[in-house]
Image (tube, rainbow, N blue to C red; front, side):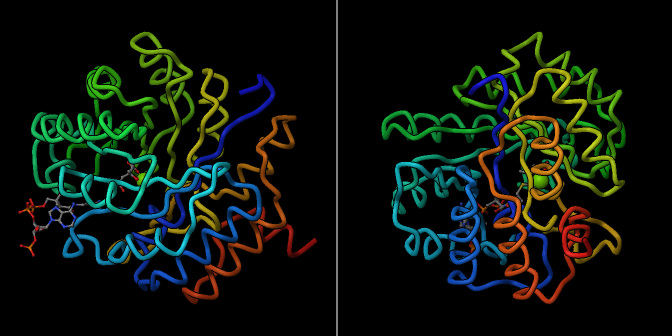
Length: 298
Ligand code: HMG
Ligand code: MG
């Protein structure tokens, strides 16, 4: 990546839609991904091979992928929690997957029903399957700046989990502020600590905007050396059980931010705004992107 570029990982069709009360059918999810790709986004999470009992919104991820012919210039990745999910990803022809765990025991148990150590043990065979098939694996650490159950999380716990994922062979570790509770000074400390344990080029920032801090936190991560940012078109997401909760930082907001700072995102702001309009119409919601709102009002 050039020193004047950042890489955006679009997670709206996964992290966003998994948290929307209304479930979109696979064809609508595939159409959203087509529109995001047409707007220049080159790394898109297409879904998750997880239990449909746990996350019904991600059922039919195989059909989403089947509707999207493979392209050399587009990475479509999926979340897998275990060997079963990895087998489904291989069956669907995925070239990239993401494994996910947390820096908090309580969150991990509620999310994937096992301890952090057990989750890492489950990833060993997943990594072996990926290696055999030449599939790239990204790793997520949730609750890096606070946990809804355990409260504050020591930085050392985040570094320990992130390091394990890195040593296991994940090519990139995405640091997730799952509850959007962090502030820039905490981001700075976290990134500095993680960068002592692995190259900063292997880190990504994954910030939710629940407390309105996500854009500021992305700037702090950028200043700490991170150049890969996860975001969700239209700020899709939230939680049906938690009024007021919001999704990931909006992709439109990051494009405006980074392009304004002279950093190339490769994405077309107007195209992404239109893709967000499509998702919002399907879901019957208003955009959560401040930039999309300002763009429309100009
Ligand atoms: P479990 O109940 O402990 O496991 O769930 P199990 O082995 O007993 O399986 C339960 C059922 O799921 C069984 O079916 C299995 O066959 C099935 P049933 O007998 O009930 O009909 N099953 C599967 N089905 C499809 N795909 C699979 C799979 N594995 C088992 N891969 C399990 C354990 C991990 C499966 C479950 O807890 C689960 O699916 N959790 C997913 C939770 C999830 O997707 N959370 C959201 C993603 S993480 C996130 O959003 C954070 C992130 O954005 C970063 C951040 O913001 O922090 C990444
Ligand atoms: Mg997330």
